[in-house]
Structure formats: C-alpha cells, structure tokens
Image 1 (cartoon, rainbow, N blue to C red):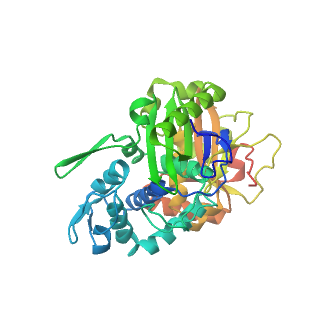
Image 2: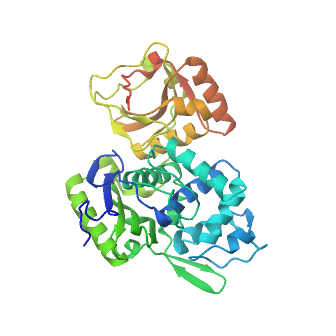
Image 3: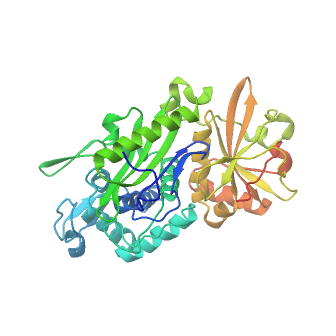
Length: 403
C-alpha cells in the first residue's frame, strides 16, 4: 500500500464528490508532479472540443509525420505518410496510450506539438487547473511538464461534464488496430464496481499514476493517485481511498437514484411565454442555489444570505432538466460556444418545483441585457434553445461564488 506521507515525495492523492466538488480525501493534492500519460486526458479534452465545435469529425483523417512515427513507446507503430481517423485516435489514446497518436492529434489541431502544448496550458488555466503546465501531448518526460492531483481531478470532472457524448470512450476495454488487440491499462474497469474511466500513466520519474471515475447509486466520485510504486499497489490504494470516500459521502439524492439516471436527459420544454412572465413561473424552492463560475471546475453550493442579482444583471436559460448534472452539462456546453460572454457569466443550476415535479433550470447569469440577447442570438445559430431573462423574470434569489 502507498505511504500516505510527504516522505514519499512523488505521492499525492485526492478524492472528490463530483456533483458538489466536496473533497473527501486529500494528501499532497497541490504538490506538482509529473503527470506522465495522464497528460493524454487533456489531449483528449482538446480533441473532444474540436469534435464539439465541428473542427473535426470522427471520420476526419489525420496524417502521420516523421516526428510522430519516431516517438518512443508506448505507440501503435504508425508509418510516416499514413493517416489515422479521429475515432481510431481516441481509442488508441485511451487504451494503448499511444505516444505517436498523441503527436498526430497535436500536429493536426495546432500545426506542431509545441503549439498544441501551449494551447493545452491555456485551456488548463481557463478550466481552473492553476498549477499545471504542459510541454507535450503525450506525457513523455519533460522537466517543465507538471500537474497536481487536484488539477487532474478538475480535468476529469470537466471532461466528463463538458463532453458527455464522448466520455464513454474511457470505458473501452479493448481496441483493435491492424492485427493486434490492445487492452485498457485501467484495470479498475474490470475489478472495481462502478468504474467508467478514466486513465493511467507511468514514467520512471512519475511512478504509477491513475485518475478514476466511479459511479454507484447515483453518486459519482473522482479519485487521483500520483506516484504509485507498482501498478498493482496503486490500484489497491485507489480502491481503498474510494471505499472510504463512498462511506464518507453517504447516499446520493433520491433524484439521482432514479432508474433512468443513465439515460440521456431530455430537456423539459417550458414555453417562452412562461419563462418571460414572472407570475407564470413556478414558485422557487427556498434553499441555496447551486452555482459555479462557467469556466472553473467543480460546482459548489452557495450559502444562504449571499447577494441577489443586481438590477442590470440578466441571465440566459438554455433548458430545464430532470437531473442537476444534465443541467450543468447543458450550461457548460453553452458557455463554451459564447467566447468572452460565456467566460464572464456565472453558471447557475436553479431548482424549481412545477406540477409536483422538481426540475433544474440551466442558466448563465450575471450579464447585461445586451449581452444576454446577444448570447441567445449566437446560441441559436448553433440550434441551441435560449431565452434571455430579466432579473424580475428570474423570480429567484441567485447568489454568486466570489472565488
């Protein structure tokens, strides 16, 4: 078992409750270490973003350069001048952790791996990874490539929440390419109930690293371990941390335990008329509103008594859902399509009761009327439903997180 003490300099770990961001375990969580192939989680984040914005499709062919073909193992053994499609690249990065594929992706998206690494670092800062710097797309040794357990937990949560269409790839257990079949290095997929991702990593300097996502009875935890002495001891330690964290976290809310919680959430259609007339709105639940900065990591819970929206602070609503995590995903996807408007707004998940049923409204709040109307015009070009809402029409106290 790993020694949970600073004496083992490379060791760090954290376990968070994904829905609330609550830290259930933490040891050296902000110590900077070598991420090794955990780096490829960010490479995949960038690739998923390119898919989401239409820059590439799953069928897009990416050319293999001489540099990519010459990368050190682990690799697929791609030949210079050949091509590989995006879907194959995703599976190769997740299961084989192929370094040659990481370079192919980097060069296709940014022209060079160094430019891609700079883009990775910028995006890391935007989503709240404040102590992470990337120098390459693969995680191969580089003294300047550093991250923390906390930052990796943020990345794991964001890739899950921002790209629900693609997160399922992380549960792929086998991948065939050519005449070979590769098995996912993340053994927790096979040995720990509820595991649905996400990735392992190893170099001599980093030790054995792991980021794991596990959901049981509607409760999702994200665990990170840096610096394991062996893959087996790292996995055993992660299981121990998660077992303790599940006991500490307690049961999930009843809504998250519904039978259809794994099904894709369908928006509850509220008419434009009802959304813009305060008297027609359902009465708000008198409890803290779930909020988070649109470009930061885990969602937090606002405390009672925090300030309300000012008279010039509008919001946009992009749907109402039966589950809070579905509402959060919708709001985050919308914020990403809005450039600076999305970054300046606050992500608000507002619970309401209507016709005896609780729904969660996905909103971006704290912007001017002009920006709210501009945002809806932009979102409608992407065929995203959007309603601009005045402070009066919101009909509820909305608190802001000052972090």
